Image 1: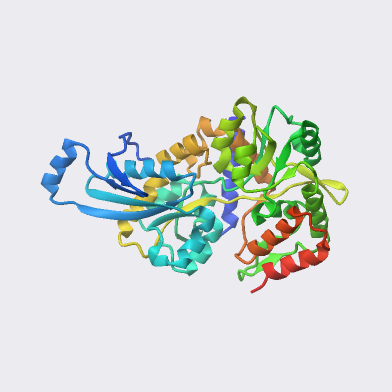
Image 2 (image 1 turned 180 degrees about the horizontal axis):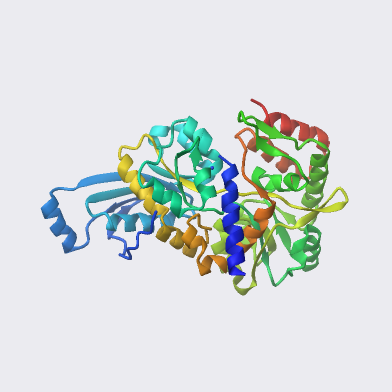
Length: 428
């Protein structure tokens, strides 16, 4: 069974090769001691051996690097950066950490490229825009090793026109259902109708961030609608056709159910195990939800939902997270070394251990620990109904507005609302 799960998981990663989104350090040295002020850490030598090396090599260069990561990643990011510094005593290292999640990386970079991080993570769907903005250094060091260490789909997702522009970090940029096994059974979570019935009976709520276009698309994709890019990069979106209208009616019915609750991931993380019995999210919330639910932790593919009088499997997006190096960095070689270290086998294993993130590294993905993880098993099962995220920036705002209207129990004409969504999403 484990081999089957791993096979599905890696197949999902390889499927990303349709989309345009290192070796192990092997060193177990503890992080170097350092002094931290605010969000900056200066890592200095902690051993007499390093001092002796200094005397031979002469005065060291101080390398200052700014690194962006999500709020969830901050603690581990600092741990790994300090470990990198301890393994590279030839320099003194100063790290400045910024809280910028993957979804916001592109926008924050474009605001002021010179002030952006030297090393930052982004979802694969932002790659083309970042390359066109001359934001990303081409990966030129240890390219063959990086390619062989990671699932082929994630390498393709981090490449553009055959050039590698980033370091694959995860292969789990997708979503599925988390649920409280003390409230819902495996049979309940197969259908949205079953979930809502059980939730209402127990006086619990069902969470989904419908005003987030990433999740909203699940209903439309499940019913056969298209959201992709043509060969010229133009957005294709047909959510306003007959199938789209059926999906919109299903979304409205869901939002009007007494058990429905919306909000971002913090609402789900805070409420699950209490007032919330299940919700849709991804691996980035796995650790906190496991902690809340304990033995009642459950994960499953997305449910089917009633659409046009029949049961339809919810679709989803599946992508990967990539670490990139800013073309405006003053230290490109060192930034590349850091990016490679932060995404190597050992770091990905640690990231899975601490945060539950699904690895792009083949060896880590094949490990028993990953194969036995129920959340990644759910992701692998959902990947059969997922597509690569071929979406440009014009889609997100109208999708958010459409979802927000339904969350607010709008009684507006759905066809008119869908026409507006598609018109704005496909505007050039």
